[in-house]
Structure formats: C-alpha cells, structure tokens
Length: 151
Image 1 (cartoon, rainbow, N blue to C red):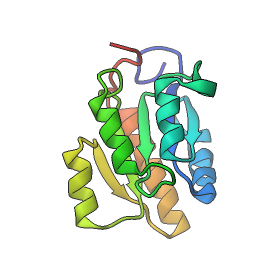
Image 2 (cartoon, rainbow, N blue to C red; image 1 turned 90 degrees about the vertical axis):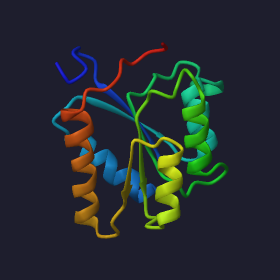
Image 3 (cartoon, rainbow, N blue to C red; image 1 turned 120 degrees about the vertical axis):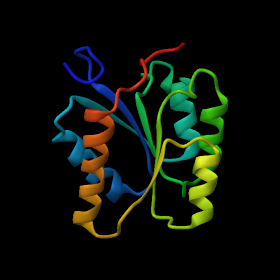
Image 4 (cartoon, rainbow, N blue to C red; image 1 turned 135 degrees about the horizontal axis):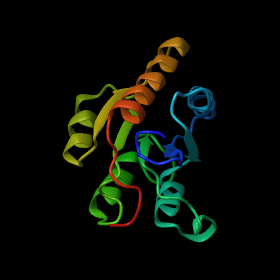
C-alpha cells in the first residue's frame, strides 16, 4: 500500500513541453519507491482538457498531484494554475510549479494563485534528477494527499 492507503498507484500529471525533461521525469518516477502512474500534457490547453476529461481525455484519471511548468505553449502555466484553483472539482489537487524561472515575480504570482510549492528546475542533469527525486520523496512518500475523486 502507498500513502493513499490503497493499492492503486498515485496518479501524477506532468505538464511539460520539454521532451528531455519529460524523459528524465519518466525515468525517475519509473524507479520510484511509491507506485505511480505518470501522465504527460505538453501544453496548458492539453492539461486542462485532461483535468476536465474533455475530448480524448474523457476517461482520464483524476491526478493526485500536478507538476506544472510555467513556460508552456498555447496557455501559460499561471493561467492553467488559475483555472485549476478556481474550479471546485480541481482546486484541492496539489500543484507543484516546476520551472526554469527564478523570477521573484513568478514565485509571488504562483503562490498568489495558490500553488502548493515553487521549484526552480536546475539546468544540470544530475541536479534535475535530484529535484525530481526530492519531489517524489516529499509529495509521494511523506505528504498525505487529499482523496482522489470529485468532492
């Protein structure tokens, strides 16, 4: 059993347009201590369609946690975050901002929009792997996540 108290894996939605970062995250989560299922959306529009179960995502799961890049095509991360946190069905899903931005304005805006945490992606490969592992350790092992479902 995992931290959810049941046998199902933790559902993770990674919203990331950089294929290299997606591959690295997939590798880390594949080797994770906690059973998980990683889903990937490559832009903000796709992420919201996944979360709202629209079109090809009508049978999508409800993620337990969202890893959200800010610099996304079609719809930026702050706009996606704002829509998630304004939606009664989605607002309790923890959102971890995972971005290359170190801009204090991005940090403040993310927290003002109710991000659960803000992590700057390191450019070094090993450091990036360590960051993803620390997300896995903290959010999937230590933290008690809210129930996965519509409430």
